[in-house]
Image (tube, rainbow, N blue to C red):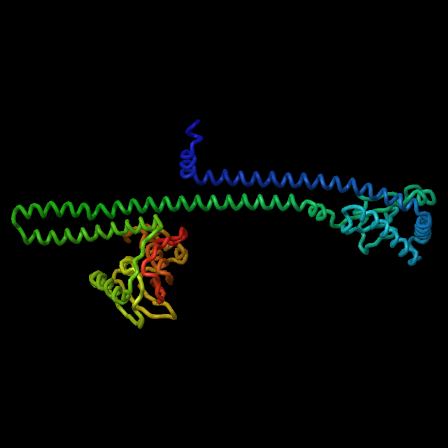
Length: 459
């Protein structure tokens, strides 16, 4: 029992069965929504009952008002007799006078309550053939007036046939009026339901994001293990062969193996640097040491490093440095890594013989670096994810592109910390163009930058 109530148990359960947890949470939210709607309906029904009781009292009050007003009763009787004789009312002036008096009596009753602004219609009708005698609306549906109806008055009943004529009142916006009187309950319900829905949506989104991140981390660890095992195994094997040649005095073979060992060590160092980049991304803080740097010199350094690789693949790496202002206040080490990552990606995601163009320009107050390849390109649905940590462009079932999914996340972070921007344009099977914009204005030489939690992260 203690284990079931523990926090770790529920965390593990949510991670292992996210679909079931989402379903249960959705059912819970739906259940609470139905309960809330039920209580609102109950409140509406109670208000309607109270309204009907008050209206019954108002109708009785209007009935007594007609009864106690002798001159008005006589005028009403005269109109009803005319209706019985001619099947209609011809004395329009008397009719208008009676109708005005009825409206005054209704308004007097409603003004004494909270229903002063409630719109209404009224009429007199006969129960002999359910026909309208007179009313204040052009289109009258008699059935609407049956709910709130009362006798026209005792004198009318005595002068004419008992119960033949009745008075009815109808409220066309009764439902909305009742709802408006419940505004606090409705507002509270909407806010609570909205808050509950928002929390549910946020929880599900966070759960999916956590699951995706956990999956990417697992892929990263598996990839990292594979990437590190190869140079470690190769270095160990070459070391044994080198020892054997050293004992034999075969210095020529030993020199060759030491060169290979140096190359493997360099690869291993590069992979460790990637892991260090991960540490920087995870902890979110980075000390930047900015110095006046010739950015073209940095670019040439990176291009000279990758040119032999491109040439070995029978590719082409062209350089077009057109920017006139090249001295920027940057952290040289990190900017070198940024350029290296872009060139490394351009080679990885190109075809057999990569074609890469590197160029620079100045636009307004920004230095711009362009790295363009003509390779596989990026799918439109992946454009928003390439800067996410651990993310790597999908290659279907192929895993021929090596890497940890940290390169572009690192690029994005470093450029952001320099106050710049990273823009990307790409088309599937046509290639990708990255544009790095760095501000030309001077900044403090050494600043501590804190990475925002929503920093985009890695292709």
